[in-house]
Each structure stands twice: as structure tokens, then as C-alpha cells.
Length: 267
Image (tube, rainbow, N blue to C red; front, top):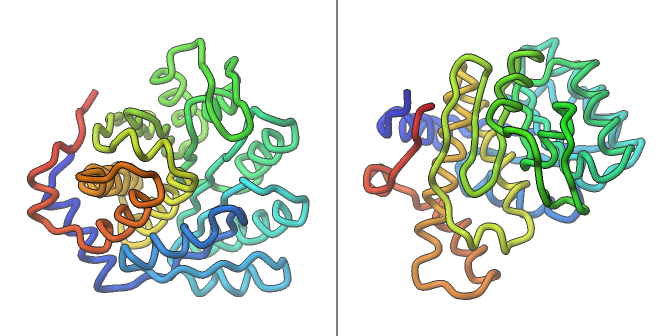
């Protein structure tokens, strides 16, 4: 399914069209999400107020919702924006940060999934397992363990809800219930930097903004991000240095870079 030329073609389309990506995201990593989106070539906007989210998302090409710093007001805005995005046929990415850690986070993610049409559900192993109804340990926003088969959980969850599931980790799993791939790109340093998961959701939102195949767009976004991570790791020893290089590598990524790196393995 995965072709480097097609993947890089979407990246070039983002750089050319500069789609607006509306974020309702968390305050810890809001700058990182804005910067990675801009470095990729898209245009970020961070609009959270319920009084403007419907108007703002009407101008956008995709919507990214991140529940990392959750409040009732944020969920209200997320529901309003998602419903308007659905009306306009705009893809919606739900980054279920911390689902499984508290009842509020789990219930809020489920509420968005139930009441709006999510295009891509993204999370780590614990978050996705929790939303699939399986036992998982989530400590804060970190996945500590999943007992059941994660690949089967992802495929079944995608089939049940009709969206793409993206499980991020050492190897990313992407499935729409019919097609499933593992994204093998990335570097262990990405796990030592606050914000890399949130930035991954922004990458997905940017790719969805210019591509109709949500499954491919999600896998390509994570592969592109992982390749940038591998490039950024060269000669880098400290997390903050790596983070800055990661953002720069996304901005400077070439087709030749993509050709040199491994991409994904079909399942």
C-alpha cells in the first residue's frame, strides 16, 4: 500500500496548498503543535472559545482535538467544532490523551466518538485499549501496559466505529478495519520529549487536510514524522536539542530522505 513517491507527493501538496488546520488542543504542547504544523507547510490556528470554534472550523481544512488539558468548556467547544466539521465534510482527528487515567478523560473521549463523526482516533497503547473496552494501565498520559492483543483491538475498534485508528509507540499501528499497517519509522529519543505525541496528531491533521484516503494519509503522516525523528537523532544526545532538530527536519525533509529510510510493513 505504501509508496514513498505518493507519500512525498502529499507532503508537497501540503507545502503548496498551505491548508488551515484548526486545533482545540492542550496548553502544555500548544506551541509545539503550532510549530510542527507550520514547519510541515500547513497553517495552524489554535481556537478554543465556544463563541468562535464553529466559525473558525468553517474556514479550516481539518480539525485536531486533543484532550490533554481537559476542561468541561474544552469538551463543549470540541463537540461544537466537530459537528460543524462533520457538516462541512472536514476530517476530525481525536487525540485521546490520558484516556484511561481518569473517568473524565475516558468519558469525554467516548462522548466525542459517540456524538460526532471522528475520522482518526489517535492514542498510545493504553489509551486505545481503554477506548476499545480492554484492560490497560495509563499513568497520567503514559501507557504502562496492555494485556490484550493491541493489533486486534485496533482493527476491531476501527471496524466498529468506521474510523481510522492510529496507535503510536515503538511501532505505530494504523488500521481502518480492513487495511492495517505498521509504521516502523521513528527513534527512541521521541519518547523522551514532551509533546511528540501531540505533534504527531498535528502531522495527521495536516495530511488529512489534503488527502481523501484517511488510512493512507494517517500512515504517511506518521512515517514522515518518524523519518524526521530518525534524521534528527543523528549526532543528538539531549532531548531539547533533539526536539528542535525534529521540527527542523520536518521542515527540510526531501524526497531523497524518504527514499533512503524504511517506511512501513503491511500486515
